[in-house]
Image (cartoon, rainbow, N blue to C red; front, side):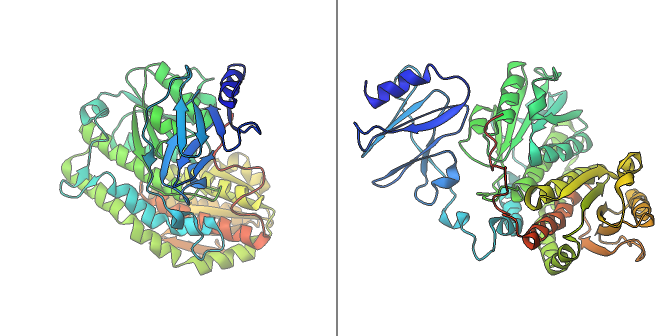
Length: 471
Protein backbone atom coordinates (compact mmCIF):
# COMPACT_ATOMS: atom_id res chain seq x y z
CA UNK A 1 0.00 0.00 0.00
CA UNK A 2 0.96 3.61 -0.47
CA UNK A 3 0.94 5.85 2.60
CA UNK A 4 -2.38 7.34 1.49
CA UNK A 5 -3.94 3.89 1.00
CA UNK A 6 -2.61 2.72 4.37
CA UNK A 7 -4.09 5.71 6.20
CA UNK A 8 -7.47 5.32 4.48
CA UNK A 9 -7.54 1.62 5.36
CA UNK A 10 -6.52 2.30 8.96
CA UNK A 11 -9.15 4.91 9.79
CA UNK A 12 -11.97 2.49 8.98
CA UNK A 13 -10.82 0.51 12.04
CA UNK A 14 -10.53 3.45 14.43
CA UNK A 15 -13.10 4.24 17.11
CA UNK A 16 -13.69 7.58 18.84
CA UNK A 17 -12.21 10.96 17.98
CA UNK A 18 -8.85 11.49 16.31
CA UNK A 19 -6.73 13.94 14.33
CA UNK A 20 -3.29 12.86 13.14
CA UNK A 21 -0.56 13.31 10.54
CA UNK A 22 1.31 10.32 9.08
CA UNK A 23 4.73 10.16 7.36
CA UNK A 24 6.65 7.29 5.78
CA UNK A 25 10.37 6.87 5.15
CA UNK A 26 9.38 5.26 1.84
CA UNK A 27 7.64 8.45 0.64
CA UNK A 28 9.81 11.39 1.78
CA UNK A 29 8.20 14.80 1.47
CA UNK A 30 4.68 13.41 1.76
CA UNK A 31 2.17 13.96 4.57
CA UNK A 32 -1.24 12.34 4.98
CA UNK A 33 -3.58 13.66 7.66
CA UNK A 34 -7.06 12.67 8.78
CA UNK A 35 -9.66 13.73 11.33
CA UNK A 36 -12.89 12.72 13.01
CA UNK A 37 -14.34 14.61 15.96
CA UNK A 38 -11.14 16.61 16.53
CA UNK A 39 -10.18 19.72 14.53
CA UNK A 40 -7.57 19.75 11.80
CA UNK A 41 -6.64 22.67 9.55
CA UNK A 42 -4.42 22.64 6.46
CA UNK A 43 -2.56 25.85 5.61
CA UNK A 44 -1.73 26.72 2.00
CA UNK A 45 1.52 28.70 2.00
CA UNK A 46 3.85 29.88 -0.76
CA UNK A 47 6.12 26.94 -1.45
CA UNK A 48 5.14 25.36 1.86
CA UNK A 49 2.16 23.69 3.53
CA UNK A 50 1.06 23.35 7.14
CA UNK A 51 -1.08 21.03 9.24
CA UNK A 52 -2.28 22.05 12.70
CA UNK A 53 -5.07 21.47 15.17
CA UNK A 54 -5.79 25.19 15.53
CA UNK A 55 -5.96 28.12 13.13
CA UNK A 56 -3.73 30.22 15.42
CA UNK A 57 -0.79 27.90 14.76
CA UNK A 58 -0.59 28.78 11.06
CA UNK A 59 -1.77 32.38 10.69
CA UNK A 60 1.76 33.69 11.15
CA UNK A 61 2.71 32.01 7.84
CA UNK A 62 -0.45 31.93 5.72
CA UNK A 63 -4.04 33.14 5.62
CA UNK A 64 -5.19 30.49 3.12
CA UNK A 65 -6.58 27.52 5.04
CA UNK A 66 -8.82 24.51 4.62
CA UNK A 67 -10.73 23.07 7.57
CA UNK A 68 -11.12 19.32 7.15
CA UNK A 69 -14.50 17.71 7.80
CA UNK A 70 -15.02 14.43 9.61
CA UNK A 71 -13.75 11.37 7.69
CA UNK A 72 -11.80 13.50 5.22
CA UNK A 73 -8.14 12.82 4.44
CA UNK A 74 -5.62 15.35 3.13
CA UNK A 75 -2.72 14.27 0.92
CA UNK A 76 0.15 16.79 0.96
CA UNK A 77 3.40 16.84 -1.00
CA UNK A 78 5.47 19.63 -2.60
CA UNK A 79 3.23 21.65 -4.90
CA UNK A 80 0.09 19.63 -4.11
CA UNK A 81 -2.65 19.53 -1.48
CA UNK A 82 -5.49 17.16 -2.20
CA UNK A 83 -8.48 16.44 0.06
CA UNK A 84 -10.41 13.18 -0.27
CA UNK A 85 -13.79 12.26 1.20
CA UNK A 86 -14.72 8.98 2.91
CA UNK A 87 -15.19 7.31 -0.50
CA UNK A 88 -11.77 8.38 -1.72
CA UNK A 89 -13.14 11.00 -4.11
CA UNK A 90 -11.31 14.30 -4.47
CA UNK A 91 -13.10 17.19 -2.74
CA UNK A 92 -13.22 20.32 -4.90
CA UNK A 93 -13.05 23.09 -2.31
CA UNK A 94 -11.21 26.40 -2.46
CA UNK A 95 -9.24 27.38 0.66
CA UNK A 96 -10.70 30.07 2.90
CA UNK A 97 -9.01 33.41 3.53
CA UNK A 98 -8.81 34.40 7.20
CA UNK A 99 -8.44 38.02 8.33
CA UNK A 100 -6.22 37.36 11.35
CA UNK A 101 -2.54 38.24 10.94
CA UNK A 102 0.86 37.80 12.59
CA UNK A 103 0.48 40.90 14.78
CA UNK A 104 -2.66 39.39 16.33
CA UNK A 105 -0.64 36.52 17.79
CA UNK A 106 2.18 38.63 19.28
CA UNK A 107 2.24 40.07 22.80
CA UNK A 108 2.74 43.63 21.60
CA UNK A 109 4.75 44.74 24.64
CA UNK A 110 2.50 43.05 27.23
CA UNK A 111 3.97 40.61 29.72
CA UNK A 112 1.38 37.96 28.92
CA UNK A 113 -1.14 37.32 26.16
CA UNK A 114 -3.96 37.39 28.73
CA UNK A 115 -3.04 40.95 29.72
CA UNK A 116 -2.96 42.01 26.08
CA UNK A 117 -6.31 40.36 25.39
CA UNK A 118 -7.96 42.03 28.38
CA UNK A 119 -6.96 45.40 26.94
CA UNK A 120 -8.11 44.42 23.45
CA UNK A 121 -11.71 44.17 24.59
CA UNK A 122 -12.85 47.68 23.53
CA UNK A 123 -11.63 47.03 19.99
CA UNK A 124 -13.18 43.55 19.96
CA UNK A 125 -16.52 44.95 21.12
CA UNK A 126 -16.45 47.59 18.34
CA UNK A 127 -15.69 44.94 15.72
CA UNK A 128 -18.49 42.70 16.98
CA UNK A 129 -21.00 45.54 16.95
CA UNK A 130 -20.02 46.80 13.50
CA UNK A 131 -20.52 43.37 11.97
CA UNK A 132 -24.29 43.57 12.47
CA UNK A 133 -25.09 47.19 13.27
CA UNK A 134 -26.76 49.37 10.63
CA UNK A 135 -26.28 53.01 11.70
CA UNK A 136 -28.56 54.21 8.91
CA UNK A 137 -31.48 52.23 10.23
CA UNK A 138 -30.41 52.41 13.91
CA UNK A 139 -30.97 48.68 14.08
CA UNK A 140 -29.31 45.33 13.48
CA UNK A 141 -29.30 43.56 10.17
CA UNK A 142 -31.17 40.28 9.97
CA UNK A 143 -28.82 37.49 11.00
CA UNK A 144 -28.68 35.87 7.58
CA UNK A 145 -30.99 34.54 4.91
CA UNK A 146 -31.55 31.35 6.91
CA UNK A 147 -32.86 33.18 9.98
CA UNK A 148 -34.99 36.20 9.14
CA UNK A 149 -37.02 38.40 11.48
CA UNK A 150 -40.11 36.43 10.57
CA UNK A 151 -38.43 33.18 11.53
CA UNK A 152 -37.13 34.65 14.79
CA UNK A 153 -40.69 35.65 15.66
CA UNK A 154 -41.82 32.05 15.21
CA UNK A 155 -39.72 30.49 17.97
CA UNK A 156 -41.61 29.67 21.16
CA UNK A 157 -38.56 29.00 23.29
CA UNK A 158 -34.80 29.38 23.31
CA UNK A 159 -32.21 26.90 24.59
CA UNK A 160 -28.64 28.09 25.24
CA UNK A 161 -25.82 25.57 25.62
CA UNK A 162 -22.08 25.96 26.18
CA UNK A 163 -19.18 24.97 28.44
CA UNK A 164 -16.97 26.89 30.86
CA UNK A 165 -16.80 30.65 30.36
CA UNK A 166 -19.20 30.49 27.40
CA UNK A 167 -21.74 28.86 29.73
CA UNK A 168 -21.63 31.95 31.96
CA UNK A 169 -22.35 34.02 28.85
CA UNK A 170 -25.37 31.81 28.20
CA UNK A 171 -26.67 32.44 31.72
CA UNK A 172 -26.67 36.17 30.99
CA UNK A 173 -28.03 35.50 27.50
CA UNK A 174 -31.13 33.95 29.08
CA UNK A 175 -31.73 37.22 30.94
CA UNK A 176 -31.23 39.22 27.74
CA UNK A 177 -33.66 37.15 25.69
CA UNK A 178 -36.37 36.97 28.33
CA UNK A 179 -36.14 40.68 29.16
CA UNK A 180 -35.84 42.08 25.65
CA UNK A 181 -37.83 39.56 23.61
CA UNK A 182 -40.09 37.97 26.27
CA UNK A 183 -39.29 34.54 24.87
CA UNK A 184 -38.82 31.76 27.46
CA UNK A 185 -35.16 30.71 27.58
CA UNK A 186 -33.22 27.94 29.28
CA UNK A 187 -29.51 27.27 29.63
CA UNK A 188 -27.57 24.14 30.38
CA UNK A 189 -24.05 22.76 30.22
CA UNK A 190 -23.42 21.26 26.81
CA UNK A 191 -21.89 18.24 28.54
CA UNK A 192 -25.26 17.57 30.25
CA UNK A 193 -27.57 18.39 27.35
CA UNK A 194 -27.68 14.94 25.78
CA UNK A 195 -28.36 13.26 29.11
CA UNK A 196 -31.26 15.39 30.40
CA UNK A 197 -33.81 14.58 27.64
CA UNK A 198 -34.27 18.29 26.82
CA UNK A 199 -37.55 19.65 25.52
CA UNK A 200 -36.55 21.02 22.12
CA UNK A 201 -38.45 20.81 18.84
CA UNK A 202 -39.11 22.73 15.61
CA UNK A 203 -40.25 25.76 17.60
CA UNK A 204 -36.95 25.94 19.54
CA UNK A 205 -34.03 28.23 18.73
CA UNK A 206 -30.92 26.49 20.04
CA UNK A 207 -28.05 28.93 20.67
CA UNK A 208 -24.67 27.22 20.95
CA UNK A 209 -21.75 29.32 22.15
CA UNK A 210 -18.07 28.39 21.75
CA UNK A 211 -14.92 30.47 21.34
CA UNK A 212 -13.13 27.87 19.24
CA UNK A 213 -16.13 26.43 17.47
CA UNK A 214 -14.60 23.01 18.16
CA UNK A 215 -15.71 22.28 21.75
CA UNK A 216 -16.58 18.59 21.67
CA UNK A 217 -19.48 18.65 24.13
CA UNK A 218 -21.01 21.75 22.54
CA UNK A 219 -20.76 20.24 19.07
CA UNK A 220 -22.39 17.01 20.25
CA UNK A 221 -25.18 18.98 21.96
CA UNK A 222 -25.85 20.99 18.81
CA UNK A 223 -26.08 17.83 16.72
CA UNK A 224 -28.52 16.31 19.19
CA UNK A 225 -30.65 19.48 19.25
CA UNK A 226 -30.81 19.58 15.47
CA UNK A 227 -31.72 15.89 15.39
CA UNK A 228 -34.71 16.75 17.58
CA UNK A 229 -35.79 19.50 15.19
CA UNK A 230 -34.31 22.64 16.75
CA UNK A 231 -32.80 25.42 14.64
CA UNK A 232 -29.14 25.85 15.66
CA UNK A 233 -27.65 29.34 15.85
CA UNK A 234 -23.91 29.28 16.60
CA UNK A 235 -21.99 32.09 18.29
CA UNK A 236 -18.31 31.40 17.63
CA UNK A 237 -15.03 33.24 17.21
CA UNK A 238 -13.35 31.08 14.56
CA UNK A 239 -14.62 31.17 10.97
CA UNK A 240 -14.55 27.76 9.33
CA UNK A 241 -14.76 25.88 12.64
CA UNK A 242 -16.85 22.72 12.82
CA UNK A 243 -19.69 24.30 14.81
CA UNK A 244 -19.80 27.26 12.42
CA UNK A 245 -20.01 24.91 9.42
CA UNK A 246 -22.69 22.64 10.84
CA UNK A 247 -25.01 25.23 12.42
CA UNK A 248 -28.06 26.52 10.59
CA UNK A 249 -26.92 30.11 11.17
CA UNK A 250 -23.80 31.75 12.60
CA UNK A 251 -22.97 34.97 14.44
CA UNK A 252 -19.23 35.67 14.79
CA UNK A 253 -17.83 37.44 17.83
CA UNK A 254 -14.84 39.07 16.05
CA UNK A 255 -12.65 38.86 19.14
CA UNK A 256 -9.67 37.93 16.99
CA UNK A 257 -7.14 35.28 18.09
CA UNK A 258 -7.26 34.56 21.81
CA UNK A 259 -4.01 32.88 22.83
CA UNK A 260 -4.41 32.87 26.62
CA UNK A 261 -6.21 29.78 27.86
CA UNK A 262 -8.35 31.83 30.27
CA UNK A 263 -10.96 33.49 28.07
CA UNK A 264 -11.43 37.25 28.38
CA UNK A 265 -12.24 39.14 25.18
CA UNK A 266 -14.09 36.12 23.78
CA UNK A 267 -16.43 36.26 26.79
CA UNK A 268 -17.29 39.95 26.52
CA UNK A 269 -17.88 39.70 22.78
CA UNK A 270 -20.15 36.73 23.39
CA UNK A 271 -22.20 38.96 25.69
CA UNK A 272 -22.28 41.66 23.01
CA UNK A 273 -23.54 39.25 20.36
CA UNK A 274 -26.11 37.68 22.72
CA UNK A 275 -27.36 41.18 23.53
CA UNK A 276 -27.64 41.95 19.81
CA UNK A 277 -29.52 38.72 19.26
CA UNK A 278 -31.94 39.53 22.09
CA UNK A 279 -32.59 43.02 20.66
CA UNK A 280 -33.20 41.49 17.25
CA UNK A 281 -35.61 38.96 18.74
CA UNK A 282 -37.33 41.79 20.62
CA UNK A 283 -37.87 43.58 17.32
CA UNK A 284 -39.14 40.36 15.74
CA UNK A 285 -41.63 39.65 18.53
CA UNK A 286 -42.76 43.28 18.70
CA UNK A 287 -41.71 43.65 22.32
CA UNK A 288 -39.19 46.38 21.43
CA UNK A 289 -40.41 49.43 19.57
CA UNK A 290 -38.24 51.70 17.44
CA UNK A 291 -37.46 54.16 20.25
CA UNK A 292 -36.56 51.47 22.78
CA UNK A 293 -34.45 49.63 20.20
CA UNK A 294 -32.50 52.82 19.50
CA UNK A 295 -31.95 53.35 23.23
CA UNK A 296 -30.63 49.81 23.62
CA UNK A 297 -28.26 50.21 20.71
CA UNK A 298 -26.88 53.50 21.99
CA UNK A 299 -26.24 51.89 25.40
CA UNK A 300 -24.21 49.17 23.68
CA UNK A 301 -22.24 51.64 21.61
CA UNK A 302 -21.00 53.36 24.80
CA UNK A 303 -19.40 50.17 26.12
CA UNK A 304 -15.92 50.49 24.49
CA UNK A 305 -15.28 53.95 26.02
CA UNK A 306 -16.62 52.76 29.38
CA UNK A 307 -14.18 49.84 29.26
CA UNK A 308 -11.31 52.27 28.73
CA UNK A 309 -12.37 54.12 31.90
CA UNK A 310 -12.03 50.91 33.89
CA UNK A 311 -8.57 50.19 32.48
CA UNK A 312 -7.44 53.56 33.81
CA UNK A 313 -7.90 52.04 37.30
CA UNK A 314 -5.49 49.16 36.71
CA UNK A 315 -2.87 50.42 39.17
CA UNK A 316 -5.44 50.42 41.95
CA UNK A 317 -6.50 46.88 41.05
CA UNK A 318 -2.85 45.82 41.01
CA UNK A 319 -2.41 47.14 44.58
CA UNK A 320 -5.51 45.26 45.72
CA UNK A 321 -4.12 42.08 44.15
CA UNK A 322 -0.82 42.58 45.97
CA UNK A 323 -2.64 43.09 49.26
CA UNK A 324 -4.84 40.00 49.05
CA UNK A 325 -3.00 37.48 46.87
CA UNK A 326 -2.11 35.37 49.92
CA UNK A 327 -5.71 34.88 51.06
CA UNK A 328 -6.82 31.30 51.62
CA UNK A 329 -10.17 31.58 49.88
CA UNK A 330 -12.10 33.96 47.62
CA UNK A 331 -15.89 34.33 47.43
CA UNK A 332 -17.55 36.27 44.60
CA UNK A 333 -21.13 37.49 45.15
CA UNK A 334 -23.62 38.90 42.66
CA UNK A 335 -27.34 39.19 42.01
CA UNK A 336 -29.45 39.14 38.86
CA UNK A 337 -27.39 39.40 35.64
CA UNK A 338 -24.27 39.98 37.75
CA UNK A 339 -24.50 36.57 39.42
CA UNK A 340 -22.95 34.86 36.34
CA UNK A 341 -20.21 37.50 36.48
CA UNK A 342 -19.46 36.34 40.04
CA UNK A 343 -19.13 32.80 38.68
CA UNK A 344 -16.89 34.03 35.87
CA UNK A 345 -14.69 36.02 38.27
CA UNK A 346 -14.20 32.94 40.44
CA UNK A 347 -13.43 30.80 37.40
CA UNK A 348 -10.79 33.23 36.13
CA UNK A 349 -9.04 33.28 39.50
CA UNK A 350 -9.10 29.48 39.79
CA UNK A 351 -7.83 28.94 36.27
CA UNK A 352 -4.69 31.04 36.44
CA UNK A 353 -3.80 31.36 40.15
CA UNK A 354 -4.79 27.85 41.37
CA UNK A 355 -6.46 29.44 44.41
CA UNK A 356 -9.78 28.27 45.79
CA UNK A 357 -12.57 30.57 44.64
CA UNK A 358 -16.33 30.28 44.45
CA UNK A 359 -19.08 32.34 42.87
CA UNK A 360 -22.48 32.56 44.55
CA UNK A 361 -25.79 34.27 44.19
CA UNK A 362 -25.57 36.74 47.06
CA UNK A 363 -28.98 35.75 48.42
CA UNK A 364 -27.66 32.22 48.92
CA UNK A 365 -24.79 33.27 51.15
CA UNK A 366 -26.65 32.42 54.35
CA UNK A 367 -27.51 29.00 52.96
CA UNK A 368 -24.01 27.65 53.42
CA UNK A 369 -21.09 29.80 52.22
CA UNK A 370 -21.23 32.15 55.20
CA UNK A 371 -19.83 29.30 57.30
CA UNK A 372 -16.52 29.73 55.45
CA UNK A 373 -16.13 33.44 56.21
CA UNK A 374 -13.20 34.41 58.42
CA UNK A 375 -10.19 36.73 58.26
CA UNK A 376 -8.55 34.48 55.63
CA UNK A 377 -11.35 34.94 53.11
CA UNK A 378 -11.72 37.79 50.62
CA UNK A 379 -15.28 38.47 49.50
CA UNK A 380 -15.81 40.42 46.29
CA UNK A 381 -19.29 41.88 45.94
CA UNK A 382 -20.77 43.24 42.70
CA UNK A 383 -22.96 46.19 43.66
CA UNK A 384 -25.17 47.79 40.96
CA UNK A 385 -27.44 50.77 41.38
CA UNK A 386 -31.12 50.34 42.17
CA UNK A 387 -32.96 48.00 44.47
CA UNK A 388 -30.16 45.43 44.53
CA UNK A 389 -27.63 47.89 45.99
CA UNK A 390 -29.05 47.83 49.51
CA UNK A 391 -29.30 44.03 49.46
CA UNK A 392 -25.69 43.63 48.29
CA UNK A 393 -24.42 46.07 50.92
CA UNK A 394 -26.32 44.09 53.54
CA UNK A 395 -24.57 40.91 52.35
CA UNK A 396 -21.19 42.61 52.67
CA UNK A 397 -22.08 43.81 56.18
CA UNK A 398 -22.67 40.16 57.13
CA UNK A 399 -19.19 39.31 55.85
CA UNK A 400 -17.56 42.18 57.72
CA UNK A 401 -19.31 41.14 60.95
CA UNK A 402 -17.50 37.79 60.67
CA UNK A 403 -14.06 39.35 60.08
CA UNK A 404 -14.04 38.67 56.32
CA UNK A 405 -12.14 40.97 53.99
CA UNK A 406 -14.29 42.85 51.47
CA UNK A 407 -13.67 44.40 48.06
CA UNK A 408 -16.73 46.03 46.49
CA UNK A 409 -17.03 46.48 42.73
CA UNK A 410 -19.67 49.18 42.46
CA UNK A 411 -21.54 50.99 39.73
CA UNK A 412 -20.84 54.71 39.81
CA UNK A 413 -23.32 56.42 42.12
CA UNK A 414 -23.34 53.65 44.75
CA UNK A 415 -21.78 54.47 48.12
CA UNK A 416 -20.49 51.65 50.30
CA UNK A 417 -19.81 52.67 53.94
CA UNK A 418 -16.09 52.83 54.69
CA UNK A 419 -16.39 50.44 57.61
CA UNK A 420 -17.73 47.68 55.31
CA UNK A 421 -15.27 47.53 52.40
CA UNK A 422 -11.48 47.35 52.54
CA UNK A 423 -11.37 48.63 48.95
CA UNK A 424 -13.85 49.86 46.36
CA UNK A 425 -13.49 49.62 42.56
CA UNK A 426 -15.87 51.78 40.55
CA UNK A 427 -17.23 51.04 37.07
CA UNK A 428 -19.18 53.51 34.90
CA UNK A 429 -22.93 53.82 35.18
CA UNK A 430 -24.75 51.69 32.59
CA UNK A 431 -28.03 50.02 31.76
CA UNK A 432 -28.58 47.04 34.07
CA UNK A 433 -28.30 44.56 31.19
CA UNK A 434 -25.12 46.18 29.86
CA UNK A 435 -23.47 46.40 33.27
CA UNK A 436 -22.16 42.78 33.33
CA UNK A 437 -19.92 43.62 30.36
CA UNK A 438 -18.23 46.21 32.59
CA UNK A 439 -18.35 44.42 35.95
CA UNK A 440 -16.29 41.54 34.60
CA UNK A 441 -13.27 43.67 33.67
CA UNK A 442 -12.01 44.43 37.21
CA UNK A 443 -12.37 40.72 38.03
CA UNK A 444 -10.29 39.74 35.00
CA UNK A 445 -7.57 42.23 35.96
CA UNK A 446 -7.65 41.17 39.60
CA UNK A 447 -7.27 37.49 38.67
CA UNK A 448 -4.41 38.37 36.32
CA UNK A 449 -2.46 40.41 38.87
CA UNK A 450 -3.02 37.89 41.69
CA UNK A 451 -1.62 35.16 39.43
CA UNK A 452 1.26 37.41 38.38
CA UNK A 453 2.20 38.00 42.02
CA UNK A 454 2.11 34.24 42.62
CA UNK A 455 4.28 33.56 39.57
CA UNK A 456 2.01 31.02 37.86
CA UNK A 457 1.97 30.28 34.14
CA UNK A 458 -0.82 32.68 33.25
CA UNK A 459 -1.16 31.99 29.53
CA UNK A 460 -0.87 28.23 29.82
CA UNK A 461 -2.15 27.19 33.26
CA UNK A 462 -1.57 23.62 34.32
CA UNK A 463 -3.96 20.86 33.23
CA UNK A 464 -5.93 23.18 30.91
CA UNK A 465 -6.23 23.49 27.15
CA UNK A 466 -7.52 26.38 25.07
CA UNK A 467 -9.95 24.24 23.09
CA UNK A 468 -11.51 21.21 24.77
CA UNK A 469 -11.91 18.96 21.75
CA UNK A 470 -12.53 15.68 23.60
CA UNK A 471 -15.22 14.78 26.11
